[in-house]
Image 1 (cartoon, rainbow, N blue to C red):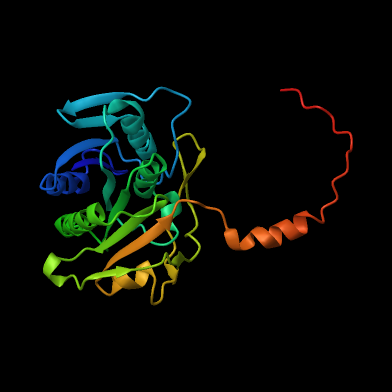
Image 2 (cartoon, rainbow, N blue to C red; image 1 turned 180 degrees about the horizontal axis):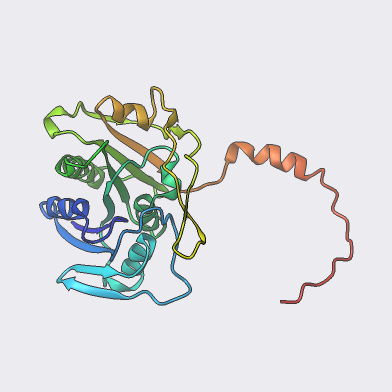
Length: 261
């Protein structure tokens, strides 16, 4: 098996190091990851400047770009042959509920899925300092072995969140849905030395829809949460309703001034 590993915490982050060492027991590992922390980059691609790569070992590249850049470049030119699977992580922190919208960890996995490969995102959920990366790596190893026998549908990735506990204290796996957070905390305003306001993005809100069946609840009870994420963002349940009111919008052939670029 050949596994492509990326992340959003950067190539030097402990999570990706622990994950790659565990995955080497399953097959060949290639690492293509950002040269610095790119948390919150979501699915962004770098389009306004070139992305530079630096080869740091035989099968490891450091990238001056986003997590999506890393996987995109790896699969569309860097690697001579596609790997069998893309794994993103281990993220230092939760990717629960709404977090997946912003997460570079999830975005790297999603890019792998967009380009036709099975993909997993994995995060370690901790309260103060992350300790049990080995637990998350072991959870991924079990899932990878299972996926190799029973692949997912072509538009699905797995978002895995692991409690920061020793393996012996994990209670098992639970398949969950994404929960939902309360609104994020307000931004933190400061003033730079020149008197210009600066803003730090505030922390994510606590769980709101976090009851039984959600990823929040599973992790809180000591279970590894596995959430299948559907890459197709179409809200099929709304198609009929939207088609109904769109049909009632008057469409008149009026004269609109041309816009000059």
